[in-house]
Amino acid sequence: MRGLRHMLLAMAAAAFLSGCPCNDTVYFLVSELKTTHGDSYILPLTDPDDIAAARAIAADPGEATARIVVATIGKCADCKYINRDLLQGGRKWSWCVTGFEAFAENTIEIYDGWPTFVEDDVDGWIENTNGVIGFWSYTVTRELTPWEVLSGRLAD
Image (cartoon, rainbow, N blue to C red; front, side):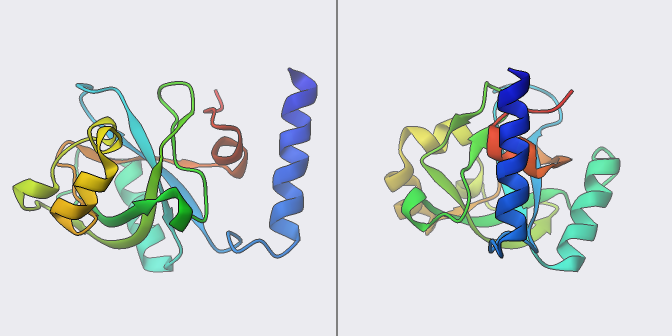
């Protein structure tokens, strides 16, 4: 297991040093504050203002008023990273965030859901919402390391 961890870290470092398009990307875990569904997804951000806002939310998610992630999603063919449920063993979703819109205080009801619900019918979700998510009970809960994103496991 230790060898696998070192290999993954080496692969992550090589990817970042080789000009990977994720060099300017910071990844965050989006999950519930009060667990109902127990799942999560990964949010990639590149804009420094968005990254700062996400870090502030993660530092104290209960105090943030505009904490709902509003984003567009696409099927994995459109993804630049592997979206995973890091709270349930790192299983891969067949969808990912393809564009970040904003942090909001609320969204319209059709955007509310949860990652597993989207996974159950990705095509239907994209068709019904134009690919927009804005899950009411989910927010940024922590920043992720490259190792966590690549391995699908949260570091202790």
